[in-house]
View (tube, rainbow over the protein chains, first blue to last red):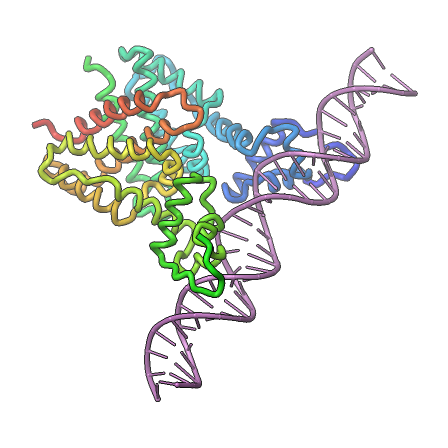
Length: 185
Length: 185
DNA sequence: CCAGCATACTGGACGGTGTACAGTTCGTCC
DNA sequence: GGACGAACTGTACACCGTCCAGTATGCTGG
C-alpha cells in the first residue's frame, strides 16, 4: 500500500498489527520481518518503532490477537467437557495456522488479555468441579502444556504423525489429566 | 584456537560439534553462530560446511549430544518410578541449561541416537507394565511433551514461576499421566 | 619419485535481518 | 502565527547463513 510521498501515513499500533497479521497470513513466519510489515504499509522500516517497542512486542500482540478467535467456555458448561473442548479448539486453531506454533513456543504461550480471559474461564470451570483456585492454575498449565506440545508435534515438518491421530492422542491425554486433577464425585 | 596460517586445520565433524558445544556453553544460544563456531576453531566460517550440512544439522547434533548426559532407566526398574525419574532427570538437565530448551522446542525434541535409545528404554518399561508397543509410543510422547513444556516454563524469562515449584507440578502431572496410561494392577 | 586428484580451506560477496542515530516535515495547541 | 512534539525518512551499523571461485594440501596410482 504505497502512499504518495509527502503525506503522513497516520500509523497506529492497530494499523501495524493489522499489517503484521496480513503479512503473516500471506508469507508465514519466515516472511514476517519489520521490513516486510513496513513495506505492507508503504513506510520505512523504522517508522514502526514509533508504534511498537520491539519486533517481539509486535509478535506478542499478534499472538494474543489470534487467540481472540477462540470462544471461552460458558461458566455453566460441564467442567470436564468444557475444558476438553477449549483445549481441542486451541489445538485446531494452531493446527490450522502452523506458523503460529513456533511463536507460541518461543513465548511460552502469550500473556495478553485474550490469553488471560481464556485462563479465567477455565479456572471458573475448575472451581465448579471442586478444584480450589491455587490448584486450578497448575491444572490449567498442565492442560495448556500438553495442548501446545501436541500442536507442535502436529505442525512439525518431518511429521510422520498425522494431525488427526495426534488430536485423538491429545484428547486421551487431556482425559488422563482431567481425571487426575478433578476429585472423584 | 588460531593456527599458524598455511597449515591445515584438520577439522572433523566431531571437532566442529565440540567447538559448538563450547561456544554454546560460554555464550548461550544467541552467541551460537556459524561464525562464532568457526572463530572458536580459528577457521573461516565456510570451512564448517565441509563437515556439517547446515546450521540446523549442527544444532541437531548438539542437541542429541547433550541428551547423552542422561542415563536410560534400567530394564528391571519399577516402571512408574523409572519413567518418572527419567523425565524428571530430563527436566533437570533442561533447567540447568536453559538455552537448550528453545532449541528442543524448535526441533520437537531431537531424533538422534541418544533420543532413540532413551525412548526405547522407556518403551521397555511400559511393556513390563502391560502397555503394548503401539500405545507405548503415545504414552512416551505424552510424557515428553509435558516434560519439555514444563522445562520451557521453568526457563521462561518472565518466570514468576519458580523452577522447583514447576518441578513439583511436573511430578504431579506425570503421576496423572502414568496413572491414566497404565492399567490398574 | 612424481603426476594427478579429491578434499580442506580461504577470501570475498550476496542478500537478508533488527535497530540506532540524525534530520526533516507535519499536525496541533497556546 | 510561532513553537513544540510526534511521525516519518535516509542512512548506516553490526550481524546473520550461505554460496562461489580459487588455492593449497595431503593421499594415491603409476
